[in-house]
Structure formats: C-alpha cells, structure tokens
Amino acid sequence: MSFEPNNVLITGGAGFIGANFVRHWLATTQQGKVVVLDALTYAGNIDNLKGLESDPRYAFVHGDICDEAAVKRLMETHRIDTIAHFAAESHVDRSILGPDDFIRTNIVGTHSLLKAAKALWLDKKPVATHRFHHVSTDEVYGSLGPDDEPFHEETPYAPNSPYSATKASSDHLVRAYHETYGLNTTVTNCSNNYGPYQFPEKLIPLIIINILHGKPLPVYGDGLQVRDWLHVADHCQAIALAITDGKAGEVYNVGGNSETTNITIVKTLCDLVDEQLSQRPDLAKAFPSSPAVSGRKAMDLITHVRDRLGHDRRYAINYAKAARELGYAPGRDFATGIRATLEWYLSDQAWWQALLGRDYAAWVKKNYAA
Image (cartoon, rainbow, N blue to C red; front, side, top):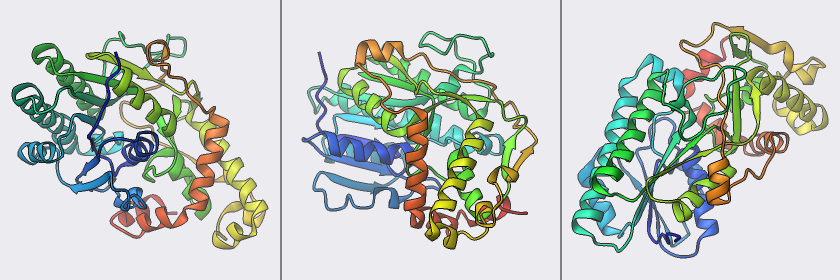
C-alpha cells in the first residue's frame, strides 16, 4: 500500500541533492507544504532554491538539525508527516582533515531528527501516518575489487573514511528507531551523484571550472578509481519512489548503471570543454586562459597528485531491488547526463562565480595555485 505524504520537511534542502529534490517534489506533487530546513553552512546555498519563493507551498527555515526543540516546533507548526533527510557533511577530504563536524551533523543531527520524529509521530500522534526517509551513500559498504559483484542491500558495512563511518552510524540509528520503536522509515544508499548545483569542490564541477581557467586538473593517484555515476535527477526520482512506495524499514540501493574511472571522467570533460570553447566565441572571450582558446588541449592540464588517504578503489551498485519493488530505473546514460551537466555550468556561470567570490574564495585560491 502506497504512502501519501502531505507536508514534507526536507533537511539540507539548500544543498546539492536536497535542492534538486525540493524542485523535483514541487514539480511532481500537488498537495501539501514543502518546508526546507538548512543551516546554510559552506555547502548550503540559498541561491540553489532561487525562484521558489513565490510558490505558496514552499517555505525556507534557517536552522540546525541538532536543535531538537526547534525541529519539534517546526514539525508541529507545519504538521509535518514526512521527513526527507539530506542534511549531511559529505566531502571525504574534509572528513579526513576534520571529522568532528561530520560526527556532529551526520550522527548527532540524525539522532536529533529521529528523537523529534518519535516524540511527535509515535508518542503524541498528531498525524495519522508518517514516513522518515534517510538519504545515505554506497560508501558505507567500503571498497570493491575489480571483479567483485556490485553492492547490494545485504552487503556488510565496512566504511573506510570518517565520512562513510558517520553515514554508516546514521543508517544504523535509523534502522534501530524502526526496529525498536516502530518508526516508519526508509533508507536509500546512492552512488556518486552529478548534475546542477553541485558544490565546486566535487570532481565534475571542479574539473569544468579549472579547465575554463586553465588551471591544473588534480587527479588522485593513477586515477583508476571506479565510481558508479548517478545523475541527481534520477536520484531524486528514486527517493520520491522510496517515500511513496517503499516498504517501512527497508533499504534501497540506487545506482546509475555507469561505472567509470575518475581519469575517464576528467578526460571526457577535457574533450567536451575543448569542443565548447572552439565552437562558442562567447565562451572563448569569457575564459581566455582555457587551453582551447590558444589551440592547446585541456588534457595537458591533468596533474596526478598524491592519492587520498584510505581511498576506496571501486564502488558499484546493484539496484535490482529498487527496480523490482519501486519501479526505479535511471533515465539518463552518462554520456547524455554529463553533456547536460556541462551545459548547465556553462549557462549558469553566475551561480558558481558567486561561490568563488564568497567564503569559498580561500579554498579556490589554494586549489587554483599554479
């Protein structure tokens, strides 16, 4: 029996995946409110939600998921019956340098939400039915060898970074609240996302922006790490299906059926950006330092750097359960998705240029050093 959400609280809704989901939900549902709760830390960007202010169903609240009392008030005020929990610290490199923020947000923050949901939905019962959906990652499963079968929902957890360890912890908390208290939960574990509004420290937007500026393209180690790339729009579709059609207490893996090495991603983007710069005088004028403007190739910018500590070699997702039980299938192949993503970054330069000039400037300066 399908669950029919009414008023949805989307945590981390100003982040990359969260903002795409807010837009997806508003575009594909007709009833109820969409309340976004986001602390607007470095990766949370209110501009990701630009244009939604006039929608009477949409509301934004600046707040912290660790503030349990505030979460409860928000849920009561808006009669929330569904939580889509995206809020998380998510960059592995940052987790290696500073795990504390990851522990606070990913573990303590998730537990704060679970406590608030239990208090209202199970103890006070102000709404007839509810759903707590938790968005997680394939990194909780660890690393695969080149010939290993892809991750499935029964793959043992083996997180290898502080980031993935905190996500694994939050997954276990969600499961425990279902098994112990009967909270109506679902979890999705996704592969690497790409698409619009992705913060520029991630591989694909970083490579695009560096090529445009003629700066080095850092590749960890030999670049042969394999990831299953998932367009964020396909991910949003899967999450919506899990919320409405997923069985309480179940986990669904979500993949893009696009295993690709990091170095292939970088080289593909080099060719695509070179192609665009050679065909579009407006881009050549805007980015005169890009190699194609002077007849060179972006691939000349590739720079292999020391590999990341504890770098997982391969991720791959078996999404057969989501296909069978939810009707999920990725709607974009990687070749189509990466072209569309590049076009978005070329068309929406103001979005990422605003980030380069804000608190992100110090990070960019460091990474753009010659």
